Amino acid sequence: MEKKSKSNPSEYLLLLEAALQDGWLPKKLKQILEGFYYSYKESLESHNMAIGPYESLFATFLRLVEQQCKDPYSFLPYHQQIRTPFDYYAFGLNFLRPLVDTNHSSVHGLKNIQEISSLLQEKENVVLLANHQTEADPQAIGLLLEKDYPAFASEIIFVAGERVVTDPLAIPFSMGCNLLCIYSKRYIDNPPEDKLKKQLHNKKTMELMKELLKEGGKCIYVAPSGGRDRRNASGIVEVAPFDPQSIEMFYLMAQRAEHPTHFYPLTLATYDLLPPPQTVQQELGEMRLTKRGGIHLAMGAKIDMEEFPGQDISDKHARRAARAEHIHSLVDKAYQQFLT
Image 1 (tube, helix red, strand yellow):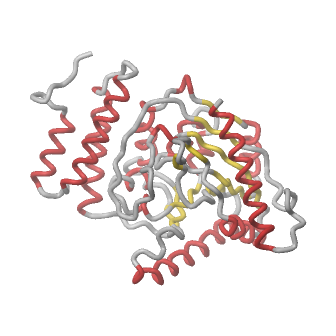
Image 2 (image 1 turned 180 degrees about the vertical axis):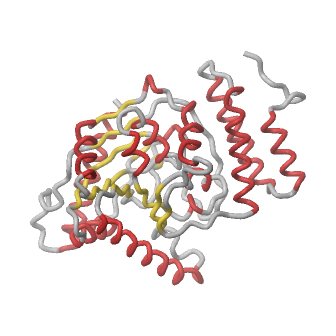
Image 3 (image 1 turned 135 degrees about the vertical axis):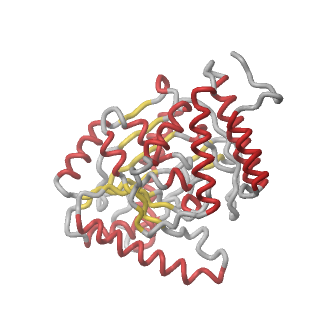
């Protein structure tokens, strides 16, 4: 395989240098984009794949980043995916596709996915209580389900945090997803002067979510952990604990919806595809280092939100904590099976 030398760099690297010279691309962002390209390239080459066929993806990506740097897209509390005139959803899938080793990937619980699809067709709602491992989880779900359930995958509504709608490198992929944009507890106090504005934004998002559930036929993905899974002190990736209050909020909203709303556990194993920083960053601008490999998804059986270990606990806070722990255990059990 022929490798490009420093004297004969790729078209994308030349575009990066030109963007820096033009002044619209900050040096830090250039370093992140350059590192991401080399990581992507090395990952493909380690599997005897050439970067050449995918250079155009990076050139398009840079053009989309330029748009965000010059005129950032403003996300509404409820953002509906943009498929025309540019198909951001398809772009996201195509960008991730070379990194996914389909021969070593898997989907479990197809029967449950079929059940969910039938419920949605009957205008009933579904909430997926899931773990979250990478920025690219929505695209990973799309790739894993595009053969058997492409429409279901593309129509999922993701509860999204601030980072994926403010980072210029994430925005092009976020624009291809259906999103309920919310500020998580982790970032709502930073900076303090914006806390009230963020709280009002979250209230608006919750009102829109109620309207969506009222319409019926909606599938909403939420990560009750409020963030991505990370490695523990022993270097093992753990499914982050679920927040009982987050689950309770969705359950209360479901009970008030005019259409029946069901809850299912969704487990993802995508960590190596695009690992998050080891520690939570307040500022934007995290490095993107990727690795080609298999990814996995498991859709569990419908959750009984009233029948669970600890359901008889009198203290409501302890009872909610027991329910959150039970749902977390369902997701974690499926995750552990991916590791064996």
